[in-house]
Image 1 (cartoon, rainbow, N blue to C red):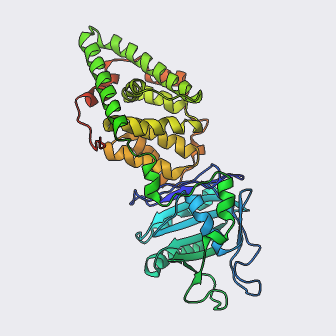
Image 2 (image 1 turned 60 degrees about the vertical axis):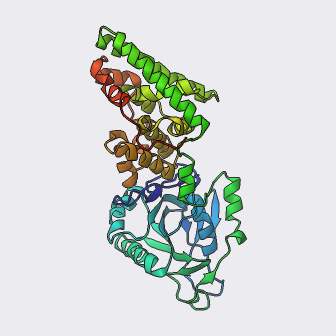
Length: 413
């Protein structure tokens, strides 16, 4: 399931995994701009002809987009979730012209999947929902029915409930043949100004989720071969240093200090518009395997760090990816790009299903938690030092255990 949360003046963004049983879904609350959060609905105008009594309301994605018809809603959804959904259920939660969350589930999903949203609606102050299902009726209708039953149970207004399939849409809340014919209403997204407005505001809608996955897929070809050589060199250097040391605790203290400096230097290089070379990237990948070094990056996290962690997630050899992919997920989640966050976590957990940071963040996304729960609550580097104490040899074990492993899921050369 995919979800996004938004603040008053935000842009829609991709969403992560709503259905805990289906990691390929995307879901989670957003606090970012348009991609993650639409600006709620305000029932002010009919989506059908002015002479009808259709219950469709207009949705104002204030201050981004104003949706006045089903076609506008269908045109906006891809920008809210980051890609054009297929066989999906999209739920937009609103309150007073501000979108509080946007969630996507792959269809079909088990009955009761949406039940976990009840406390989320209450927590986020949702008062109205808009539901859009993509696919044939036998796939979409049960999911839309469940969403409408949940709305009734929680006393939420359903601003609109649509099904879109093969260029036509049907409204579940309009039964007027003059407005909503049984055979569906043809729609053409190019007739809506939403795409143009969204593009001007920097929103992107990729063709499908797979397209988004490819944006953080491992780099192949000569770049991959160069990184493989750089990683082998970094490992050989570390092994030589370990062999030569006479005191592992002293070595650990020095290595941790160098790793923390490496993390800070990488952030500085990124902030200045630079890019790490292969040797720096390989050594940083090794450093991030140490929990204290990874947590240094976590506690210094800014939304703008997305590009750095995306670059590392694409370039590192597979066994060293989980820390970088988890940091990418954290930065993406903070920035409101929950779909990218989910995809990054899927990468990490495919390589190491037990990686605790990735599992923690995936739990947060699947339970539609907002990244605001962590803002201003992360420890400072000094607090990390106080909590963890002085470095010692056992801190190196996660890295040492990786040195002799073969890389799973090795990308093609």
